[in-house]
View 1 (cartoon, helix red, strand yellow):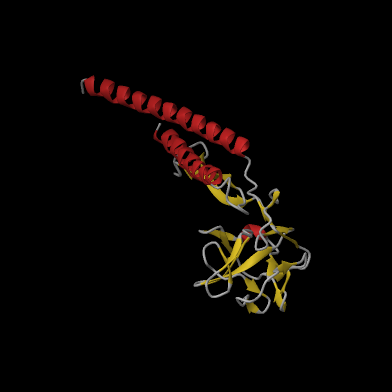
View 2: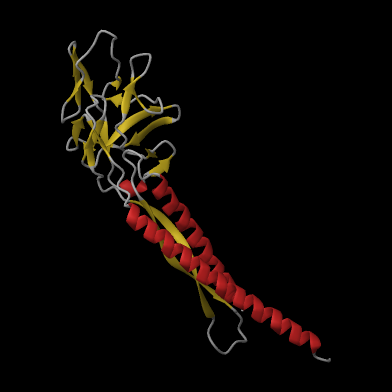
Length: 245
């Protein structure tokens, strides 16, 4: 009976983890460049009752383990904004962001120019070109970003956006601010840049809401089963307590 409760508890913990991921997806429906996540589960088998005196083989208990969180890097829809500092990436590439803890990567192309004339994200972190930070003088105008990521103004070229990709994007780790951390970035020459547009989140609100309902119902069903086991144990203890030695 105790084993059954532990197995149920492992499933409940996995469902809570899945609910957190789905809730985060829903919360980022309107986050530019956000990529939906999902949880992968696996069966964890644990042998018990290991003793030489048992005639039968060990009983195998199957627990639920949340094995990994997967990123869905399918492109989101492209929305035209008309803002020359907004860019949308079409392909597998990421923009390179300079942060206090090193280079990180994002698909969020909502950019702006800070008080120092540096091209930055909404969080204020500089967007990098292949030559470093991108700085504009107050007198410069007519900012143009072509499909290959080359930036120019009426004063001339400002460099090329540092767009990178990864051999295995699933190894990227998500951090706050819609940023990813990864190692061994590869220069990406195939991703196209669209100026005056942004990439929407690829979250499907209908699908994520359906998943949330499914998870909630599964959790409630497990809770009822756990309560039934508790009631059975309580009843067994009460009956044993009434027996005379």
